[in-house]
Image 1 (cartoon, rainbow, N blue to C red):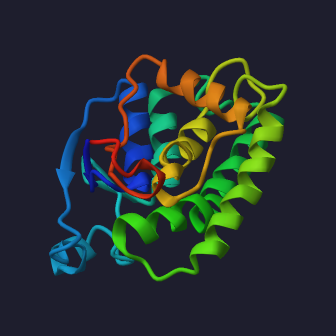
Image 2: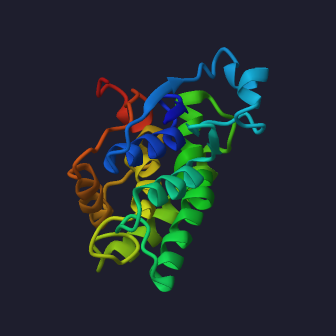
Length: 208
């Protein structure tokens, strides 16, 4: 497998993280976003939306981080990562949608402002982040993992990256005790790989 990614992208990290957690051999293929490599004709054949990550597996091309999670989970075979029970699978899909929507427009957007210079309304995206984090913290209050399972699922992987680096976007995680414990659970999993840190937002002066 080849994973086209950028080391500071949370979307790319969730794909990289799961491939590592699942023990699926893969090669990282950096994409130079600053140089516009994602806009080249070669990359457009991989993803016409000009976005990373993209997974290439023996000629099969899977764009989109959450699609990669689903594909890779099915490659692993029946497992706790993507349960086949209808109710649990629906719960996993629900949180994948949260990762693609509310996390993207909250925690992710806030970090895009400080790390990549995006022109979002800072106060608005930070508020969106907290609105979403409150719901996630409440859900985790009586759960070990976000989908209510006894073992982690791809839903936990999908949510992790941007929540873990939310302080880089000036989103304060203090006070979200359930989330702090959950982040530690994810980070203790065998095969865990961190998302590269930046000195941005609340992380200013912490080093890399």
